[in-house]
Image (cartoon, rainbow, N blue to C red; front, side, top):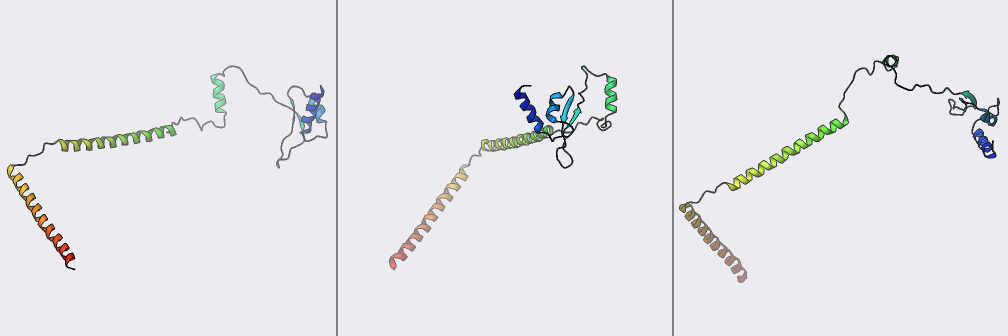
Length: 169
């Protein structure tokens, strides 16, 4: 090992809690395939002494499993029986879509009601006005003239009474 590698081994060895059965820095250089130095935490969270151990490599297979193997694995699963029935619950997306559709329908109804009210007002405005007869026009003019004359007389009397009262004092 180079001096740099030896320094790295010493640094790695110093991070473990020492084991009196072996020198950690020597064991690090002697580790083979599937071997490791392991230190775990005890119940109180204190690191245990470093131990030399064999690591079981992961097992696997390239390619798909057969239907029989799949059934055997599923039936031996601790979750077997809990997820057998397919359940299609209403998702949050579906709920939001439903609320959005309801709001859009309410807005459309409101818009239609406003348009109907506008059309009703327009129809009322466009309805033909009834023409006044000559008699109705005459009565209206006489009433207007009479009202104007009476109002003018009352107004004049009030102004003279107020102004006359001011000049007397």
